[in-house]
Length: 322
Image 1: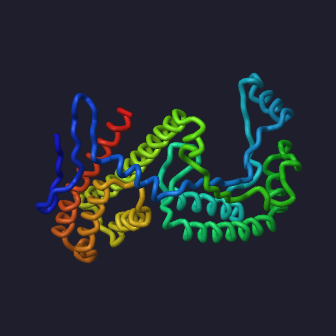
Image 2: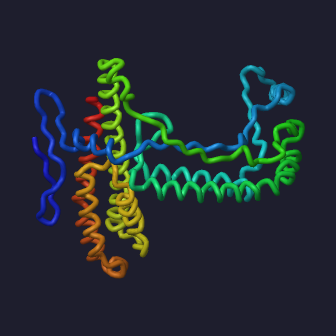
């Protein structure tokens, strides 16, 4: 069976065949898997954070359970030893979260914990950004250190008898960090001579991992794009006030998609190109003032939303078969 989607009289999308119960898809093929291997590098980013929660010590735990008349072995309790809403502490944690989020958005999922794939063309810029993020983290942690005594005194007042001075380091410098590494993935070439059978087994396993990486990335991108299309269509259909930034999420997605440039299938690239073309012809002022313009925009995006839904469905079906 072959499926085509049409927009403005032009066909696009991914064809797929079913033969003897096997799902054969041009959406995710060997060429794309091989291309992903050649154009990406494995990257791991780990965040080091100060442990803000501690198990309540035994004396405090016993006192609590006596008050509520409960069995001590049935009650678990933790305490937050630092006010997580303190501006200095919050600035550090927010920076770490923002750094990790940007890393995830610009890399491709890989089915190994903490590992993601990055376009090798983006490596130099990524390293520069990491250096800047680490430098900013040092500045923010230094600021946090200046508030260390203030945070401890606040905890002393808030935690009462559960407060323990030993929970607080004299400096937070070594308790926050951004660690980036570039692990080796794929079979070890030495196995070609040491154990050809094992090498072939590892090679097949790695190929499946790369295929899964493409599937997960395609599905994540498709779901995100489908959500954006749905919000635009809902805004128009329900007659809601159209703000000037209504299309900003779509613009942002398209820019990030262009920046990523790895792990995306031809079907996804086609949808993105179509969306980019529609946006280039959109007039934000007309969208705010004209119901006709809003309806036209929604009608133009509707086939793309359907195509993205089909992509998601096919990826799920392929993952189930794998």
